[in-house]
Length: 381
Image 1 (spheres, helix red, strand yellow):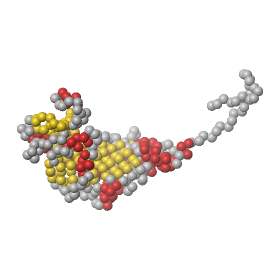
Image 2 (cartoon, one colour):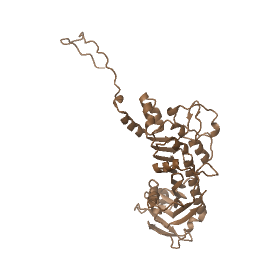
Image 3 (cartoon, helix red, strand yellow):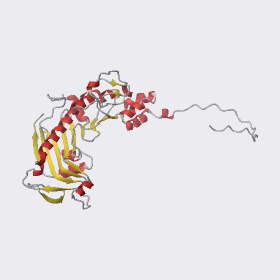
Image 4 (cartoon, rainbow, N blue to C red):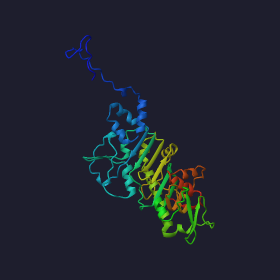
């Protein structure tokens, strides 16, 4: 607080001072910001937990936060449906997503509890809500991203498996990138891998007897017989890749099926992404695909709570070993491009395959897509 000014002509210890001025009224400069600017700021926040805290700031924030069009929901953990004995009313928009692990159960069941409609649960320490419940007060969402705590597919340590799928009312496309083992740069050098400092991607070919033909820069071509290299079949390689493909399609179709209520409750949605913290799988839906989902009835699988996978055509690319810039090595690298059999070929499909993953796996997909293509088919399931 500033000192009171001395009266004119006064000096010294006993000088008289002017009476205290009346305190100036406090001005909240945030009130001077227009709603449109505050909404722009809140849209940058996006995270559902942070938006929930914003609602506690003031009545104005409480009214504005549900009007954002960008929302990110990060699901913490999964709870078992058997713990639903404590049923109480939720706390609306202020209820933060806290799904706590109660027990270990199957991936599809986990997704059902995560995304399916269910009553709110409250303990003395934490509240439990599904994403659908937490989002119910947000009526203007255009871009929604939901992040699960982890991928549904239990894979062994060191194995690489990533997938990305696009859906409308059914599967439109899916890309799967897998490798029997992921080798880091230091391990490559220890095992005698290439380290010439060129930092260029390369792969090695394997003869039909399993011996290495040597190292060559990409692009390369497998043997001219047109058959998949023998290394693809050894040590259960073919079976492993079939399991990867079917498991990824089941995970994607289960996520798609359980999004029904969220899509129905939010007609303003223009983009929807359902991914996981492990970066294992990503389901994407655009504005047109969301519209198709609402207009066309979903075909559910008769055996489980997931969308039925249509008959498929698949393109497969394989390299016994693939080294990426930075020294990361992929042993048994496999790329699969999956499309419904009744869908005509599209020019942009190649761009989707190559651009499905972040680096360094985008480079891996680009390299593999230049290899020999093997065509496969799969029946609806």
